[in-house]
Length: 430
Image (cartoon, rainbow, N blue to C red; front, side):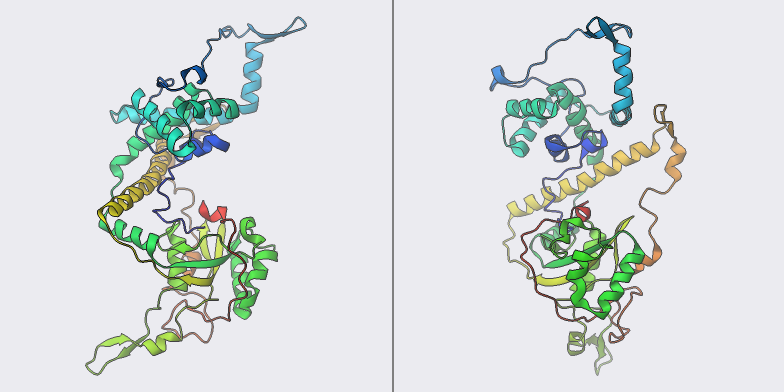
């Protein structure tokens, strides 16, 4: 669920491969979780000692150089290199060119900043990925890539490992772990969590409509999540919207988890009583009337530029006790650094793309530096949605909720809860 906290992202790194056009299957796993240092641009470093006889080998093949040279002959009829090239460009040219552009942009940035990515760094990163992420020897990992994904060792080093490590070098100087980050990390890992049902829609209007229906009858939440065509979350539809994982504080995306905790857990601000000495204090008895409870649901919260979520609290999981040791502190710091580095790597790559002068003749698209002055994709947020995801702003509310408890609603009891052995909502993970 969105409740993937920052510590939970310990072993998740920016999916560099997606940026370079390499997606799917086992390769995506290696790229998405590649968190090493830097890597060489050209071929694969030496494989090391183990299993040398069985490791993939690169066979030298003399390819025709002339466009009119034959690459194949069928019953005396020739297929030329140029014909093959034309077919390749037609079928996969745009995808491959975009990947080449991405790699070239990263390579230029590394040189511009006076950095280098050494062969030894790529070599070490391949070993690390094979050992910690694939759970096999380097040789078996490379052999698997070549057999299952048709990716040669040299291609893997050049097109996957090198760009990821280069981006890491470019992004690392801008990453800092603060004491506040550490505190939030502990809170996310060991603090309260909420088990929720979710309804996702593709438009704000649909979300508003569902919210109005839930105000009249909260018991419809499970049915709407499962049967209403306005709900677009296929991952949880069959389970009445139940999310596999509880949501923790400060989980990504933070805008969603913050709104969920503000609306479904935290005591609303503004409920105070004046004391004889003239000071004010929270009126606990009065606050109980508006304290969130199981069955309450949020207002529409924007998840992305084209998706909105309403979440219902099923249960609140208590915080866990823990012993704060130096070792745990270091693990927390390392996990948060990796999570923040992943985010920064994405930002760096997007900035490089946005500011580069690119003239893609194949697709006819031109990108100039002036493009950088335009708003980034996804930043045009509907102001009404911003308000609705902020409990301190003017959110819809029921008549029985007082004005000094903004965004808080009291709804009926939660319906019966299904077993929670289910899949997370991929749309929210993203």
